[in-house]
Amino acid sequence: MDINALYAELLNNFIAGTTFRKKGAVLFFLGFPGIFYQSLNNSGIPSLTGKSLHDHTGYCDYRKIDAAEEIDAIQRSEGIRWAYYEELIAIADAPGEQFSYKGDIIVVKNNIFDKYYPIEVSGGPKIKSDLFSDSNITKYIQT
Image 1 (cartoon, rainbow, N blue to C red):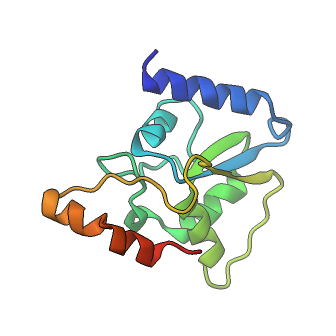
Image 2 (cartoon, rainbow, N blue to C red):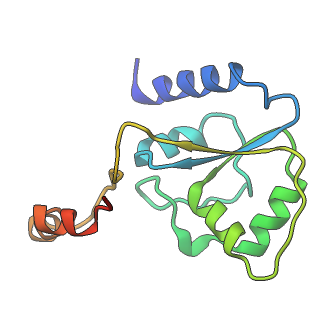
C-alpha cells in the first residue's frame, strides 16, 4: 500500500467514525507533512474554498489565502470540507468580520509531534544545518 492510499484509508475511517457527517463540518488540519495535504487534495473530500492553496511541496502557501473568500466559503459550506489550519487563522484574524456556520469546526492536530511539525525546506546543506541546529530549535520550542 502506498502512502497516498494509506492516508485515504485513514481519512475515510476517521470520517466514518464520527457524528459530524450528518450536519456538516470543516476539518482544519494542523501539522501534517506535505504529502498528507497532497493526498487530501486527491481524496474526493472538497477543500473549503475549492482553490489551490498549496505550494510545490503540498504545504499551504499562506500568501494565497484571502480572509474574505474564506469567510464566504465557510458560510456557504455544506457537507464535509477540509482546510489548512492557516485558513482558520485567516478567518479568526479577519478584522470586524462575523460569520454564521451551523456545522462543526474541527481542528485535526497531528499528534505524532509534540512541540514542532515537520516541514520540507528547500536549500542546500548549509541552510538546513543552520535552521535545524540544536541551538536554533531549542530557542523556538515553547516549554
